[in-house]
Image 1 (spheres, rainbow, N blue to C red):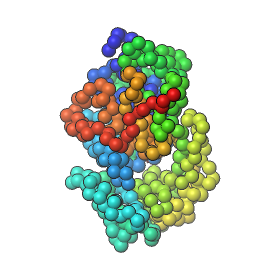
Image 2: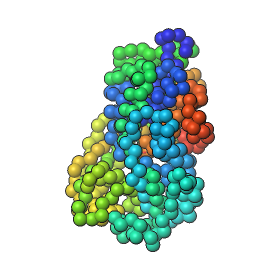
Image 3: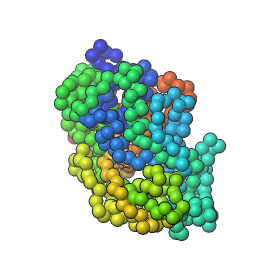
Image 4: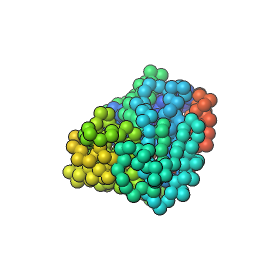
Length: 389
Ligand SMILES: Cc1cc2nc3c(=O)[nH]c(=O)nc-3n(C[C@H](O)[C@H](O)[C@H](O)COP(=O)(O)OP(=O)(O)OC[C@H]3O[C@@H](n4cnc5c(N)ncnc54)[C@H](O)[C@@H]3O)c2cc1C
C-alpha cells in the first residue's frame, strides 16, 4: 500500500466476477475497494443470468476453465469460500449434433474424472437414458451428473457480504466515469468520489468498454467488448409429461433449458441482439417468447404446449471470438481488465477471479485453491492489448 488513502486494489463492478476478485484479494491480505453503479449482484448480467453450470464446451480451453470452475463450485465450503451459491447438482446434458462426435469424445475424455464423471451417451441410448427427451437428430450427448445450475446473484451476494465483513470498502450507487494515471497510482473517478488504487481492475461487464474509452483507452479491435442482449423466456411445462430436472444445452436446435423449480423452465431463445447502451434494460420480445417455445418444444416432451410465464432479458459483454479479456493492460501500469464473458461467465467466475487475484495480489491462502489455479487461464482468455492510435 502506498499510503492510507491508497487501496491495494480498486475493483470496478459488483457482478459475479468483480465480487469474486474482491473476495479473493481480501483473502490474500489486500486492502480492497469495490465501486458499483447500483448494488452488488443487481446490475449487469449477473442479476438475470440463469446460471447453468457445466464443464463441457466445444472449445477445449473453455472446457478446461469451466472444469476448474466446477471444481470450485462443488467444493465451495471445503475450499473456504463464503456463503451459498445456490449450486444444485441436478445434472447437465449437452445434446450433440451428428457431425463432430469424435471431437466431443476427446473433450469428454479430458474432462472425465472420478469426482466429476462425464459420460458420453450414444444416440441409440438417448431416449432410454433421458425419459423426458423428444425423438430427434442428435448424434449423442455428454452427461455430467454433477453439473446443474446455481444462482449468480446469490453467489455475488455471498462473496461481497463476506468481503464486507472482512474490511472491503464499498462504494455503492456510484458510476465510474474514468480511470486516470496519477504518478505511481491510479485514480478511479466516480460521480461522487475519487478513489486511489495501486491497482485497478475493470469488471464492468458490458460497461467495460465505456469505462476504458472515457479513460482514453481502447482495446485492440478484436478484443472489443460489445453489449449484447440475451433473452430467456420462461414457461410452465405440461404436468402430464416426465419433468425435467437437469439443465440442457442442445446444439442441434440451438437452445438451452434451465429448470426453475416445479413445472417452470427458462428456455434460451436464439434471437439475441446487439444494443448500444450497456446499461439498457431491454425487454423480452414476443419473437423471443415464441422462438423459445418452439426450440424448447423440440427438446423435451414437457415443453410441448407450454404456457409463457414471462422471462428475463439481460446484457452481457461479448467479444468477436467470445473469448473473455482478462489480465494486466500492457502499457498502463496497475490497470487490469476481466470482462467480455460473452454469455458464459458464471461457470468460470470463481476460477477466473481466483487466478486474476493471484496475479494482482499474490498467492491464495488455501493450498487446495492454489493447486486448482496453478495453470492460469491459458488460451481461454485474451490478454488485454491496447489499440494503436
Ligand atoms: C440472460 C443471461 C443468461 C445467462 N446464462 C448463463 C448461464 O446459464 N451460465 C453461465 O455460465 N453464464 C450465463 N450467462 C453469462 C453470465 O451471467 C455472465 O457472463 C456473468 O454474470 C458476467 O459477470 P460480470 O461480473 O463480468 O458482469 P456483470 O454481471 O454484467 O457485472 C458488471 C457490473 O459492473 C457494473 N458497472 C458497469 N459499468 C459501471 C460503471 N461505469 N461504474 C460502476 N459499476 C459499473 C454493473 O452495474 C454490474 O453490476 C448469462 C447471461 C445472461 C444475460
